[in-house]
Length: 176
Image 1 (cartoon, rainbow, N blue to C red):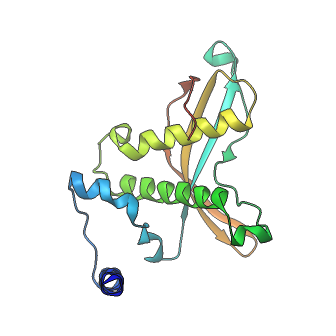
Image 2: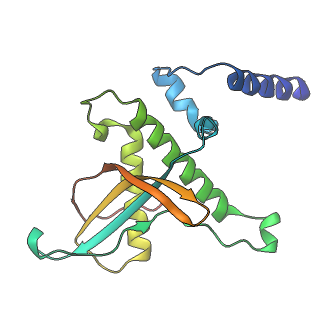
């Protein structure tokens, strides 16, 4: 029985690769997509989404001193024992899958719609703020953006900003 379910699962995955996918707008299916990886990055070779964040300290907007933009998903260091237990890298892969879903949601968003109403936008806010709180000192303001980056043999060939959040005040966040 287990083998039949597994074969059926892979048959459905294979059939989705053969047929052009459509965007399905269903609340229940939207909630189930967390169980499936975002295969959209296999469509074409090109720009890859990256989540960036920065923070600032200051009281007034004209007095803010901003840090450099930080990549939220840097590659994790691999160790030999990760063959048996690799929770940190699995969390990072889940977070990058979330960034890919956010890019896909933004790409499917009709012109003129506000991205702040997307569930993935709220999750990106949470991810960026949690990262800044863990890796930066105190700050009063922060911001995140989604960049599309094209890498080449000699490094980054092209980059553009797909979305930049408004400047937000620092607030406490519950960690993941």
